[in-house]
Length: 546
Image 1: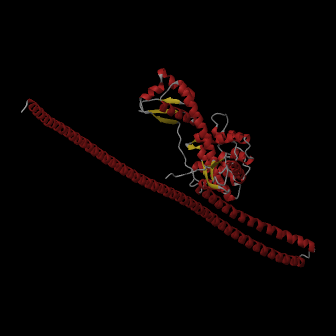
Image 2: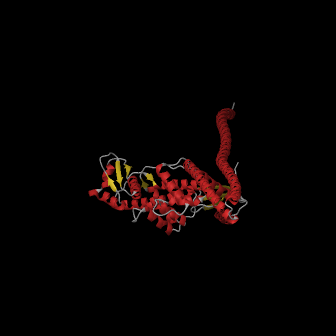
Image 3: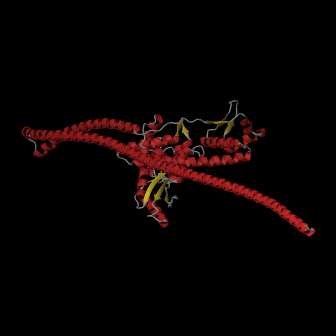
């Protein structure tokens, strides 16, 4: 072989070796690449699987959250449903309670009306029985008079017969002239008849006096049984309770300036002794004592006690007492059914609430005297209202007899004349202690009622019936108008509140309605003081959201 062949053979071997080596190297590289791609593919698959699992978990969480939200919504719906049901049940209960309350009110009103009707029936039965008794008495008197007339007719017949007999006898025996015989017989018969007439008049007068005494006793007993008033024992001292004993020192003040200011402003002695938690107010003027008591109670409650504060509280207490005095006078008038009295006289009458006479409250005594006098006047057929007015005012002078010189009778007469009271009332005031002659039966009744009340208070009063009747009349007048839904008389008949239907009465018509009710009340009713008419119109719009 030649060198060229060897070289070619060597190059071919090297080329083959290079191809094999390249192939092996390429195979290794491709295998590494394939393994790397497989690993990357596995990694990507794992990552995709992890993402899928995460998304699945997220989806599960969202589904669970949605499920929980749905359950929460369901629970809220159930809660709202239960709340609505409870609210509806509560409204039903409220409406049922309202209906029951209204039914109870109507039942009570019906019961009150039934009681009033029953009382009226009892009163009518009592009066009917009294009328029957009086009718029987009149019938008996008529029978007695008829019997007396028959006896007189019989006597006259006997007298005529006797005259005829004597006339004949005289003509026969004495042969007198006919005219002279008539004169003689008539003179004898006239003397005889006059004597019998005197005897009959005396007997009838004794019978009338006995019946009058019995009738007067019966009238007084009926008056006592149909009237009632409590006797309140009053004293000249008032006691105020303290929260603690330290308050005594504050009431006295530094060097006693507070207690001196208090006594100077009230005119009442302040007694602070060893009695625990107690202060005594002493004074003969009960009005001043009441002012001092209220002022001291206000100071104790406020806690600030000094001369300026004392003056302020005393002024407030004095105003309150003045208001109570006027209200007491108005209450007395309403209780007795008296109307149209001068306001100043009403205020003076109210002062009797704080005036006592031998331990008896003078205002209560005056009210009782008015009731007794009115009852007796009604029994006797006299003016009942005038008798009640005279009885109420008979001691009016005692309200200011501490401030004005003169007896309470003289002061009362001056007050009655000053405020233009009727002359019969003035005379009853002046004569109730016998200072002047009595000019009417009403004055006599006031004296009798005053004596009865001073000796013993009565038993029962019918003022409640008058009060209820007045309230009923006020409500009936207000409720008689078209469009009025409800009407209430409040504040003891001093105010009428009228509830109207907004669909039938406008805002402008409420003013007209108030004036119409006022005019009708003034025309048809008698009442003391003033009556306020309040017309209320309320429109409500209600909507329910579901």
